[in-house]
Image (tube, rainbow over all chains, first blue to last red; front, side):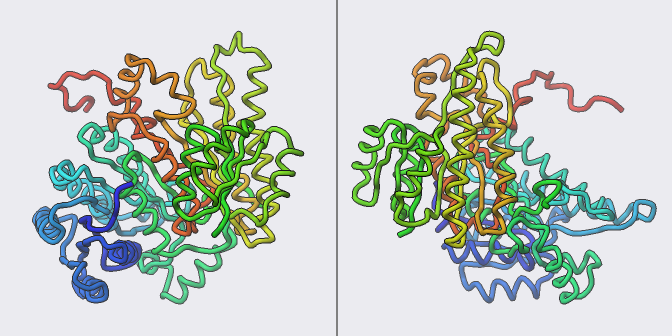
Length: 253
Length: 255
C-alpha cells in the first residue's frame, strides 16, 4: 500500500458535504490537499480549519479556465498530483414531464463532463506520479428513487466511466476507482428539496431502519474509502459501496 | 489486542493475511487442515499467533475451534479454498462436492459460529475471500466459479441478517495473484506473460495487496461498509473489451 502521508491530492467540491469530510480526513493523515468549489467562503472555512496543509482555490469544474487554474494550484501546493478526488456534484430532480432541458444539461455538465475533463487535464501529472482518480457514484444507481432520474443518470454515467477509464488508463499506470455512498447527510439533500437541515436530518434518520447497520453514514466514513482507494496499488475499476447496507436485498423481514 | 481468525492460514494468501493481521496488531488464530503448515507460519509470527487444526467442512471441528478461543474474534477471514479444474461434462461428482464443501459450506459454517460469538460481544467483522471467478466465469474451473459467486451472495445475506448485531460481512475478490493456489499456473513463463497482458495495470497481483484489502475491510475505517465485494484485480474484470481491434481512422459510428 502507498502511504497517504505527503501525497498531493485535489478534492473538488471540497468546501462542503462529503468533499469537506474527505479533505479533513486526508489532512489528518498527512496529505497535502487542495480543495476547490464554487463558493469561496465555504472553501475558506474548510481551509482555515485544516491549516497550511490545505489550500483553497475557488473555481467551477464546468469552466475550462477554472479547471486549469485548479490543477495548476494543486500541482504547486502539493509538488505534483497523486490523487484527483472528483467530489464536486450537483442535484437536480423532478417529475419526468416537468424536467427542464437546460437544467438537465447543466447537471450533466457539472456531474459528468466537468469531472471527466478535469481528469483528462490531470492525466500527465497522474502518469508521472502513477497516481489515481476517484469518482463518486451513488446508491441511486442501485435502487430507484422516483423523481431523481436526472441525478441517478449522471451517477450511472460516472460508475460506467470508472470501468472504461480504468481499462484505458491502466497501461499508463493510472488507476481509476469509484466510491458509492448511500444516505449521508450533506447539504445537497437540502438543495434536492428535502427541506431545511433539520427536516432533512429527520427524514434521513427515518431511513435508518432500511440499512443493515441501522443508521445513516457520515462523510468521514466515506472518506476512509477514498483513502483506501488512493493507496491500494492493485485496485482499479472498483466501485466501493459505503452505505451501511442500504442497497442490499429486496426484503429485510 | 483483539483477535483475528484466518482459515487456510497454513499457506499462500492465508499465511500472508495472518502475517499482515499480526503486523496490524491482532493476535492471530491460524486455522488449517494441515496443522503442521499452520504451526510453521504461526511460529514465524511469534507469540501472538496460535495454530489450530480445523476442518471448515465439519461443523463439530469448527464449533470446537471457536469454543477453544479465549475471546470473541474481532475479525474472521474465510480464506480456506479449493479448486478442482476440469470440464463440466466430465468433472467427477467427488470433485464438485469437495469444492462446494470447502468454499461454500465452510464459509457458511465458520461465519455462523463466528457470529454466535460476535453478537454478545457487540459485533465484529467477517471477510470472505472469493475470486474474480465469482464475478465472471472461466471455462474448466469446475464448481469453483459457482461457489465463489455463491459466497458473494451469501455475504449479502449474512450482512443483512447480522447487521443489526453490529457484524459487518464483506468479500474480497482477488484477481490474478502470484501466490498460493496459483503458483503452479504462473510457474509457466508463457502462461504468465499471456495472463498479465490481459490486466490493465500490466502485472500480476500479490498476496500482500489482497491482505491490505482484507485488513481495510476489517478495520474501523470500514465501519460503514457491509455486504460488499471488492475486486482486487488490477482492473481485469472491467477489461473484457480492452483489446478489441478498431481502425485508428474510425472515431465515431452511427448517425
